[in-house]
Length: 84
Figure 1 (cartoon, rainbow, N blue to C red):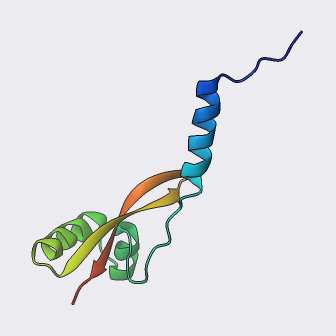
Figure 2 (figure 1 turned 45 degrees about the horizontal axis):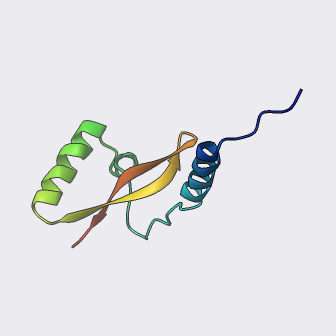
């Protein structure tokens, strides 16, 4: 019995997936996730979210999204950095 061959569509998807996984981004110094800010500040996550929202509105922080591995999969996660 002949082994099944990959379709052209599957080959294309494999190529896209391979390149997608290779594009992991380096996080610049000073950018942290909400969870990392929570650990540094020692307050509840809901408080961190409120503080960061206030800081973004008042231009005390900036937000950038980076593609990272989290919980074993690639996803885009917001990171925050103090601007002043």
